[in-house]
Image (cartoon, rainbow, N blue to C red; front, side, top):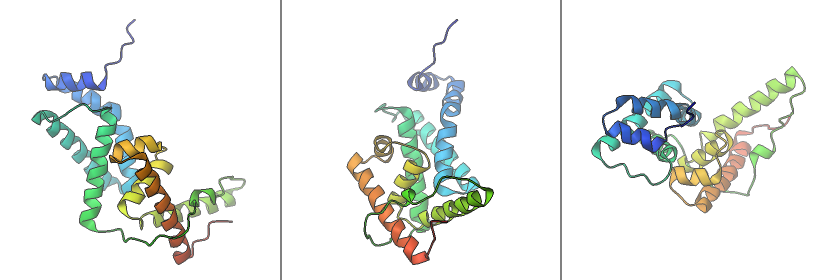
Length: 194
């Protein structure tokens, strides 16, 4: 019985040699993670589908042009493409106003995650919805790091690779995202406790 799993690089090589099904295998292998990440950031399924399709069109065009250089894992490269397309989309929309910095504060430490009753769960769900709405006000780079860390459960090392910055820059962006969330909570008078 053969349990050999074809690597991403082998699938890419096979695709470049004319095997179309290897591209389909590569997309199927990573589509869930990439699409989930895009949807988590944009919170709009049709937009996420468009950005997902754009991501793979860019990947295919890069393969076809011969410009793909294996510089690490394929998934990190693909996530970076998705990341850049999301940023480009929001830059064109100019949807995120910048909030001035203030004291350090981790909003996620204030959320009560113990759900004892239906009422507690409803209140907790509403708090989470309120926080997600506030996240939309963050600058692009801060929002992205926060979403990757808390909603996609990515390590700061992975975040740094996907966003093509140092780990210290990723940590700094998270710090400022939390600072800005605290300011937004105060400005919007959001209540985070039951």
